[in-house]
Amino acid sequence: MTYYERNLPHWQPPGKDLFVTWRISGSLPLAVLETLRKNQSLPSGKQFLHFDRHLDKHVFGPVWLKDPRLAQLVVAALKNSQTQGLCILHAFVVMPNHVHVLLEPGAELKEITRAVKRESARAANAILGRTGKPFWQDESFDHWIRNSAQLERVRTYIEQNPVSAGLVKRPCDWPWSSAAQ
View 1 (cartoon, rainbow, N blue to C red):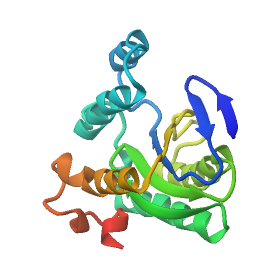
View 2 (cartoon, rainbow, N blue to C red):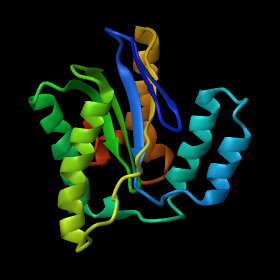
View 3 (cartoon, one colour):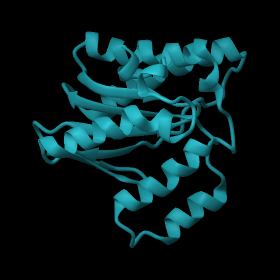
View 4 (cartoon, helix red, strand yellow):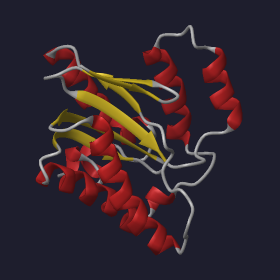
């Protein structure tokens, strides 16, 4: 099993699919981050839901991924990671300020996220006319999938995310999602 730690622990058991989320740098207010730090006793799933629901409101920080050009860059980087053999994509969604991915890793998770983030950040910052500034938050949240029922729950969660956030009525209406591909 691969394990590394930054602010969050990252486990990658062999042969397990992963649910991964990352966000645009500066997309959560410090108050939300402090609340999460203070509530370390909460299960990681509840912590995740707290910050994900806040991100879904997209009321704080940059929402650059509302720009179709930038959202498409991220979709292309995700698909490129699959083409390169880094992973197999089961489901994904690019939201205005964050990304959810359900994948089968073909490489270490940090290699997969680095490839996707690097490719998309460089191109997005060029479009935005930003240089020398981070596009993505360094850290990501990941959770390994325990069984097929959980895999289907997570797939549904990812593809329903634009509906839950009030962006569309049906998952297939959000163009930057596996539900629309």
